[in-house]
Image (tube, rainbow, N blue to C red):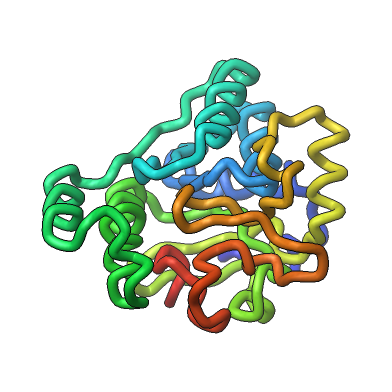
Length: 228
């Protein structure tokens, strides 16, 4: 049985090694190639842990995101599995509602996120018992009370956030310490990076998630991947 209190005494490499031991070949890490995710990827690959690493290609990513993916593959010589949305569902969505329907309503935006992100994620997690994420409690109000270990009832698996209590400064320090590849958009004011049409740089003092779906109410800024 996983104990969050015990995890709090461990370093990130120790936490990931413990997960690999407790969930042999049944743990998966979803990376969006963010600052946080690059830190976790670095330790999984450096320790050669039997943890599946995958990413979701929505078809609307920034060129800089593909660049960091390529640099990560070159650096570690390890596989990152890429999951695309079901092309027939994307074709249907764009044919019926146009290429930017997500700007028109919250319902439309969530539909696009479901087709491009949630459904591929569900496929990627099939056959796993543990889902590792790079979420931090500092990310948003929705995540402020987040625990390091929780159970995802909808997918029937344990969900672990090893960086839950890390600050952004600690994440950046870890990247600098190990010279980890990261998305160059972070140097241009982009902190939370998703699909290109739905992401902008933020201004000093703005909320971490202010650059995502900026036309919506802050309280609703989730794509559906991590909503209980």
